[in-house]
Image 1 (cartoon, rainbow, N blue to C red):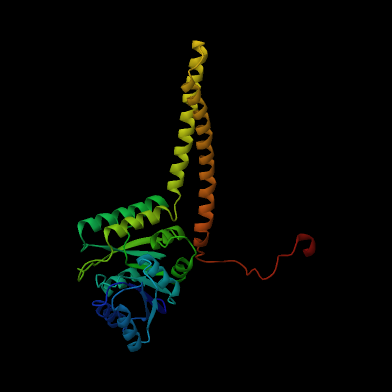
Image 2 (cartoon, one colour):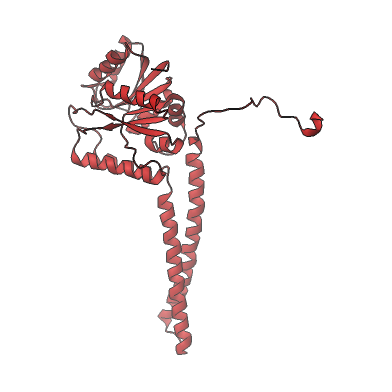
Length: 321
């Protein structure tokens, strides 16, 4: 492979029984092929996974580890590992043994061959429950839809990422940790390659409620769709209230009768609520702009630079003459 160091990031949670086998499979596969490091991120695992991690790190100096004080979620653990990585290329895989080393090799090769910034493994056959597969597909569609990226790119937990991009995304200061949304926000050079997906030993720790939480996190992290929807709703309610108020007022003027007390109260409340909803709509616009500025400003990744070094300011025309 055409780079010096590979970083393999593995988030660890409740995988005491399978972690050693997973780690050793990657060590044995990449040892004769590539200089590499393994970055294990213990995401507050309540079992004995940390003891396994420390034992493996003592046996192999290429293994580094980070331990979270509490469970922050898989994406937070992956981002931590990406930020701590040192490789020219960073690969992310799971700790459950479902992603064989050959899958990591394939996404790396496709990343280099197609000159991509990010390459996702596309599972040929997914060994998961139907509900989990549907939830994952919906989450991928939601990400592409809201961030406007390629509709044909299939997301997965097997990713090969250029090292500097991985560190920029991993260290970015945003409100919510969502790996794929950050990557899609940073680059358009994203692709796929078919990889294998093995059966898992035991039950998955990524349940449907956690996936629902991920959807909510996504919708409120790098997109302002909820605020935009609220803005449209507020202005629509304001306009509707104003129209109803005008219609009732015209009706009273045409009939030339004193309006009943309830109608006067209705018109007054309609006018006040129209103003209130209009104010909320304007407020939503400003809040969405502030949110975008604070949440996405750290996701501007510079792929390359060119031209002369900015060591000195250019001379003016008068000075040159």
